[in-house]
Image (cartoon, rainbow, N blue to C red; front, side, top):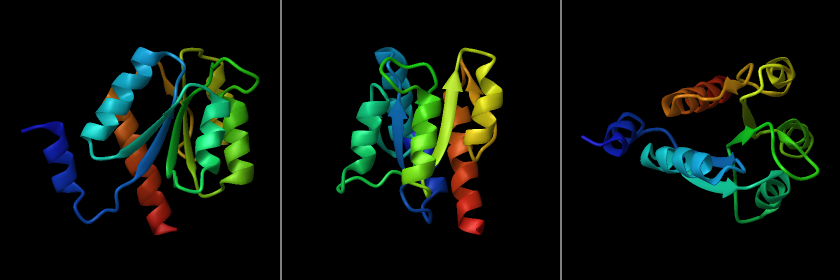
Length: 140
């Protein structure tokens, strides 16, 4: 049985969630985006914060969760993106990830699910965090 059929069957009464994956390393972004799609999520991909903001501002797209790397090229890193989301898209959840240990404390103040996921992370951990966030939102 594939991951797709297992997870969708378990979530048949839950609405399909949309996740924006923000990661400049193409192989990492592709792997996690494909995994999330297999788990039944709608997925958009962005290379940096500027591209992510353009997607978030698009009237055709409604994003439930942003999964972003902290370290990205451009004028805004993942922390800046999380702050922008808090100010402009307050209903959108943020999960940050980084290979840099010192980033965890800052991420804990910007993410509803607590501190960031440390790279390397198992793909299932991201799905677990998304489920935590959406379950918490439904209870609120």
